[in-house]
Image 1 (cartoon, rainbow, N blue to C red):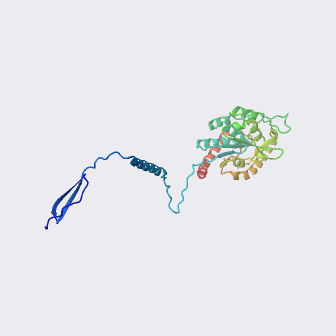
Image 2: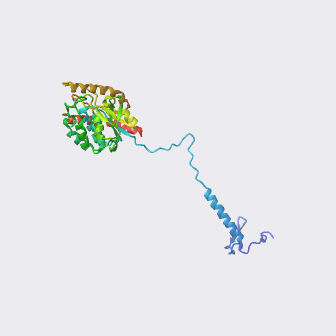
Image 3: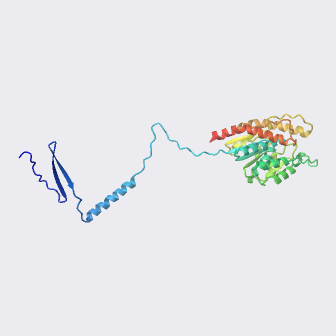
Length: 344
């Protein structure tokens, strides 16, 4: 009969109820399927447990085998690993120049104030004297205090009796170093220190790395013809300025990355030459300046204080010399910082 729908004979599970609601909306019959909560199942069988355990094992193996895939850089770009910045090894090279060496004190004061690290000191002649005191106790205030106490009589001990090889014995110089420096041996200084001397027999430049600090300074500053040559081990040594007055090459050989040199021989004019001692000293000064030219090429920064009208053994200009050292060092600070930054 039209208008009547055939009965639904589909068999459903006992847990399922089917309800058909007849609604005449646009000539369609809507059937709603309602599911009752599932029936409670019995305990799994042993076979089921075996399957579950096997699945868990496979899942664990799968998870353990997973690895993080590294990110791949876009084509054309190469990732670079930045290495940690390396601090450059900085050497301070102090040249010879007799009484002009008080300028070294001013240079060291500025470097310390500006926190420029010094990893080694190479000193020749008066540069070894100032360098030894500072290397044994890196304190510019104490260095300046000691420098202002130095008198001509503390360095020059003339003797007519033992003047065959030179009128100055150098005993007082050694005594001054022993009393002033905080360490007794070259190898024990807080900052590695390398005093430079010259072998009188061979002309070879000698770097003194071990032994008495006072004796090494004496040898490095023993101006030939004025000081008696110094016996150091099996060598006879004189002033290092004869062969290497500003020993920048030695600093490089010792592993310095940056070399700061202090040259005191920019202006060597001397008008007061009144004795044989003055003649010898001025002649050695000229020789030192000439020997320095090739060695200064190894320096990254050269500090040259403006020093004029100061004779070799004139100790009356301490303060002006220190001030000139300060001025010259301050001018060099920007270049020093630039060099350090470029190295890093």
